[in-house]
Image (cartoon, rainbow over all chains, first blue to last red; front, side, top):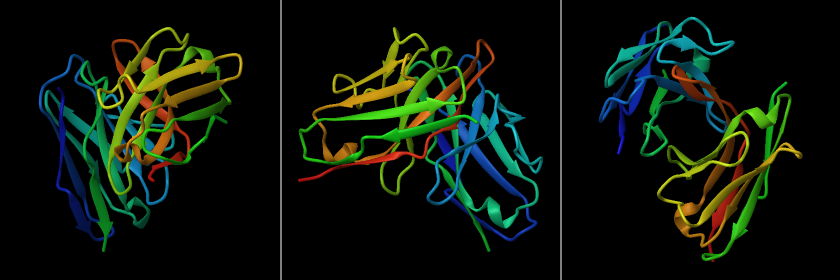
Length: 109
Length: 122
């Protein structure tokens, strides 16, 4: 069974700083692509990054995704106050069909 | 504009049943795989079930297999989740999500509803 482990659990940074979020897979899946979602407090998740590195429509270019194999990263180059949220990684596989990481909370000081 | 609107949540006793609905608009519903994803209070996201565009293929998480049934009515642009034998561990916000698939390349939940809360308690 695929398990995605995100780190750190919480990231507390100041506006303008760089945030680096990690997602590690317990095994490499066939196409190896990772998806990232942003969930602000009280809202539904929103698609941020798909295919490991492609920004979804309307997502600012300060968000970027990278990685391969079992290690993937979401980077927010210059934090804005509205980036305060929980970020989830996700992969598609066989068992289960879709797996989410446990999330990383980004706090803005 | 793509919209997904869930309904049917509420308070149900342990062992009870509930049916959730998700009405889709703004896109050709019948060609998209659709899914339910849930989130227990204060917890992360958990995939529940998925159904292909035609409705003939379904997939369930082990945690709900045999208790939940996903289905769809393409004539009504509506996705369903029939839940039975509910326990406290099923208490969560249930989101309806569209799956965007590019075969062999990528697959993601590209649109989400606002969710409907299911509370299982006596």
